[in-house]
Image (cartoon, rainbow over all chains, first blue to last red; front, side, top):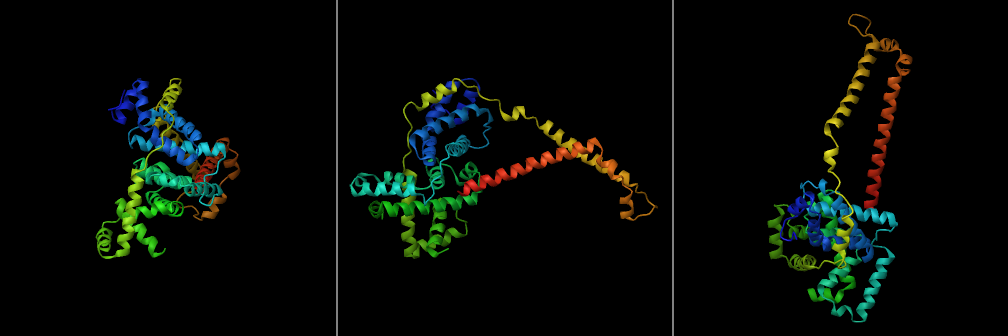
Length: 193
Length: 169
């Protein structure tokens, strides 16, 4: 197993013919890739299918990774493109803030709160659920920056936008996240302050 | 932009470490003296801390096995660099430039410009045999290639526009 090796060392092993070494990369990044795909496609089954597709594509084109950027930056670019293709193929609309479904989800969460279910949720689960209420673009940029440990420059590279645009989008996404938290998790937010 | 938004934006830049250096001491000063800034900073720090410590979702336990099963049927594609030879691309570019220069020389040659003769440009232009020029098969082929290249460029332009539109959605 290639657990202690760096990403580039594992990639060299795979390119040298040790295909099983690729499992090391899949194990290392499956949660990151799955979280990102789930944030965009908003459905666990689809997210798992897309995440698998991402690792298969990454394997197929591994020889194209030249190490100019971090492996994760390259991998998340594939995540972004694969999710866009998937959504286009399925003709799913990327959730907008005004999307009825978001309010439906929020409504469900509200009723959950009424049933005292949310009371037992940790603060982390609250953030998790609040991110789930955001539109795909906002959720993606927050996930890339905070969970996938990408810098603003790398996030911009993955999304194919300018660094300043990424900065503005991240700021707006955080503002909307805070609004969601204050609207749907008022009790938990009160506890935070 | 309202004041509250500006405070938040400046504080997020401060927290992310992306604030401009000259702004940092100003924000530090405000955080020490202004209660509203102090309160907002505390609030944003909490959100930042929560976002940083939030957990990742996990796929099914069979995930790695499924991927490995799929890739066992695949081969790694050769690197793009290895099958796109830069010399060929430069060669094609050089061919078109040479062709363009060649036609320009031929065109100017038709004008019969020479020192000492009548120098009026309109008179010289009248001497150009355009029918001979445009009935040439090579010129027609060259124009056709340019039209095809133009269509490619137009297609690229519309693809970029579509991408932009999709991002705005």
